[in-house]
Image 1 (cartoon, rainbow, N blue to C red):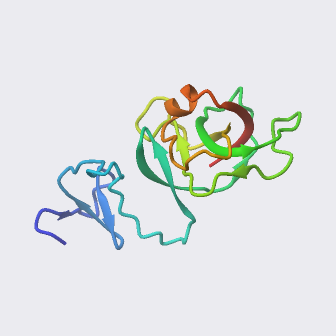
Image 2 (cartoon, rainbow, N blue to C red):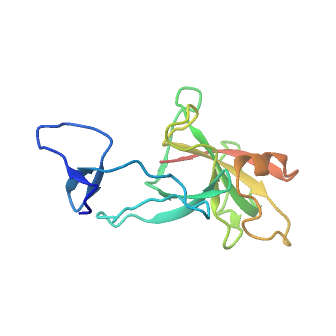
Image 3 (cartoon, helix red, strand yellow):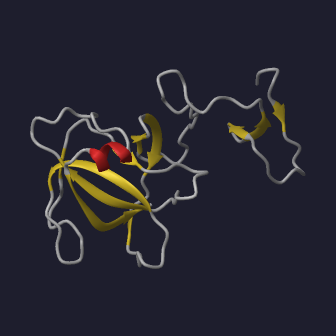
Length: 160
């Protein structure tokens, strides 16, 4: 523990803390992003979850997918996730008929992060269909996708 990190007394129930090896600690506020635009996340992944890099407004954030859910999109708040693909065909329910043909090396794109009004831990998939000559990670934000001119197919696939 560095000298500027203070252990939290056991009787204190909650706060803006860091947790390292099971011990909650106070520490000075740090910048969210580093100079390269990468989220300064520290996470030791004790449950061995699959972690992925995702774009948000041109910055890299980290996410872990917990699986697909069936939700009533008219009743449940969802955030938007964009997946860059060469092709996808949706059925009448808005589900892919087969696995979308993803662009290798392209990170998915989130439209929000925790703390934003439109954020939700549930993500509705939007497939952005790009040509074969597309350079991976050219699109790095929801705004990039929306102004790209590429076709976007909104699905009813929702993941947590």
